[in-house]
Image (tube, rainbow, N blue to C red):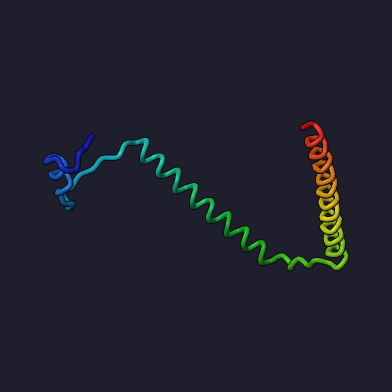
Length: 103
């Protein structure tokens, strides 16, 4: 445990970096770093190729029929949810009536 108020910690923190400063890296660290860099470079080139491909493709157009079908589906879903909420409200009213009768 390093206490930053201790003399040892102050001495370690006061060291300056120079051309004579030495540090060591393990083989595992170097391999992990190389693998990470390779992965990032590969991802960069894959992304660039996807961007180039997307630039060559024609822009997608949403047809009026597709829009109308999606709109109809959304509206039907909303109506179905509204019916379920109403049904749950009726069931809740029945449960409340039974609860008051029991008391």
